[in-house]
Length: 463
Ligand code: LLP
Image (cartoon, rainbow, N blue to C red; front, side, top):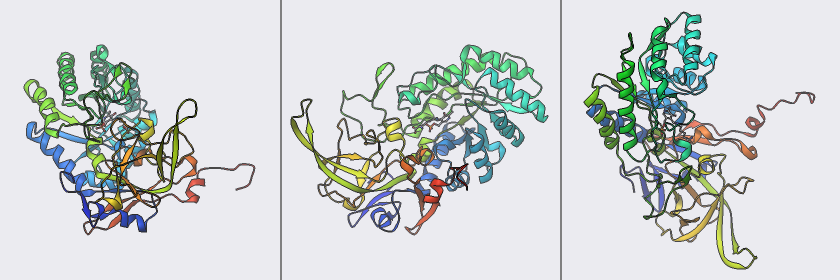
């Protein structure tokens, strides 16, 4: 059913990396995530090989915000990748998993002194400085610790991307230093005894379905590198081109059906993408190798490593048919509703960014999916309704789908575990990894009622 045979059908049941998901849901409390180590290793190898073939001096730093689960990070490390962290918490997790400080870059748009001190003290490969102010802050902390800090200013290269507006990050948004201030930033770093300017960082955004922004961004970044290297004492080691490689969440929509509207109007359908690793590698390395083959290329992919490694397994808990009515209450039709046990508490992006995740009914994999259903989550929130297929509000499932059926969300391994919450006092879900023999190993525990109360304090009411 997919390119590397991870999704298969056995006796009408959907299997993910050999795990019969309907059978697993018969034994385990839903909802839960299932991860595939095989897929993660394949994704890592595709990136290492794809970029390595075009520019051997490439280092890949997994953006751990996409999945900082400790098991997942262990596999990432074992697969030969380094790691990008975005907070003191992610730094602590990376160190705990055993990444060497040289394998860690530290990003963020509001780093605290405490976080910077932890990064300087650990001796990370580079602190990716978000502002002129932050450079001063890093210098102050480094001086206090009497330990030099390697820095790579993050520059806003001002490239439009047409992804979801919330994911566009190098187009005048909150991140990075204005490109006109880039030279000043490098000069400050070069002049400070405790700072070592080692590279330039950029990140154009996430789920980028065209290579053009990368080409433009690298061209602009290298123009800036030319300028900053005229500053005495500045000779850069690397260009960090960020992450953003897209995942195909669905087939392309029919021509003329646009994606969500952004600030500048309708955007293309950014949930579908036909790009392969080599397309990104050709665009980025094409520019870099022709202009500055001496620079090491750093990359920070998150989504493209994690997303296809995970699925979310949920159960239908309620079903009903409701009339559809017009403005005056007149009946215009009817629709079937299915309510499952996971909503934006378990899959935040479905409402946060109106994200589309494909679904299949695990126990009915052989049946034609031809009946339209509205699909909703369990939360006490009218917005907790999943986007439909194509440009409709409906998901197409086999006709008999109803209470007890197992609905599986595909491409759900990135930015999902990380973003779960306890709304409606629902426990955050468990996660499992598929084992080689078709079994499951638990990699995250499901929260209990005790966990739900564990952080609340009751002063005045006794303990
Ligand atoms: N580097 C930087 C500086 C970033 O800000 C990000 C993502 C990445 C790397 C990784 O980008 P990726 O390869 O994953 O596209 N919560 C959102 C995603 C936010 C992405 C933020 N930055 C979501 O669920 O879609």
